[in-house]
Length: 173
Image (cartoon, rainbow, N blue to C red; front, side, top):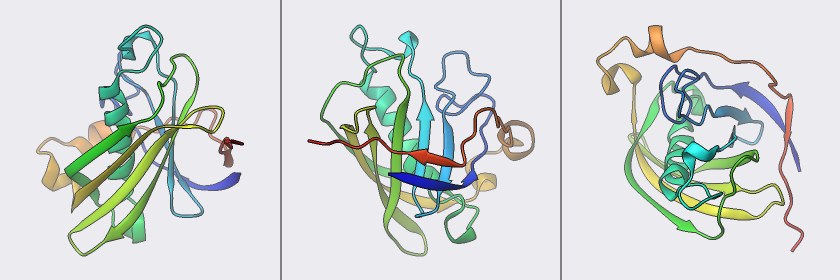
């Protein structure tokens, strides 16, 4: 299934999930899709492993949580972030290293102050490996951090290899 990319979210410098200058980070890229979902792309490496050749479960939690939290950024033009109130996940299959991994996230319900969302890590064959769900408080970056996060560290844009569409793998089982 192909989905049109309607926007790319910025990266930061040092965030573990999206920081482009974090040597041990995932360097994930986040894309807003025409259907309101968010897709993340990243390549897990050996530094992200638990058992040999497998992505650490805590890293899986980090990317799923980040993807859901980012849903608030451009949702209905809010410009807000989602700060985690509750988060849970289910592990279905191991996530291999050194292959591109996709994360797909969506808002499932919301009110004025909070929202709920779900996300999953999807393997190249379309299999859902890990599922996450959470509840988030909507907050501005200025409220979340005291640093000049938005000006100096946040609006880092890496447009290399940005697609106009993303194809999600299908699980034919």
